[in-house]
Amino acid sequence: MRARPRGGKAPLPERLAEDLAELFASEPGGAPGGAMLTWQDARDEGEHPRWFQALLVRVDAQFRLSYNFWLPPWMKERGVRGILPARFEVDGCEPGVWAMTHVATGPFQELQKELLGAARVAARLIQELWGATGPDDVWLRELADQDPSRPTP
Image (cartoon, rainbow, N blue to C red; front, side, top):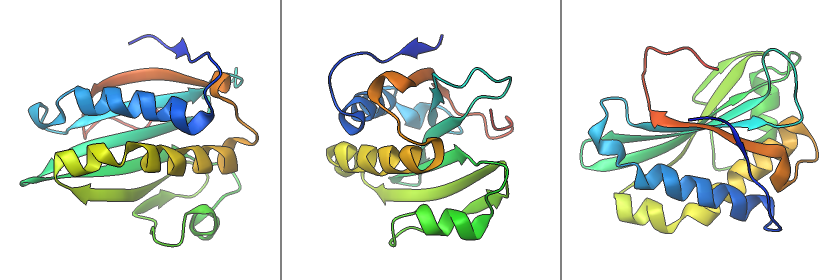
């Protein structure tokens, strides 16, 4: 999928919720690794722009939603813990490169009902990591099956 800017007047969480709805519509149970979407900072013109991923994976009869995201070069795991909501933990971290947190696990329909809440968490993390970010600053770069052997963006 090609990068596409997300225009419009909707606040960032609502804009991200629209994209998460597309992720849930992609039938993640069909791919062995689940489904993944990647957002990119539209303002970052560097060779390796800032990114943020939502991963939806089937775990037995349940589904798991996780976020995998870019970290600034100076940020370590302690800093990631500082920006995460208190109920979340750092599930993986390569300091200055990426971190991952588990957002929710449950039946598909239950997770689907909580998309706006999950989008609010994503928007909060994006704001913390990328600075002031509006809906037009976030591109949906990719919506695809997740390949667990694939490196981070």
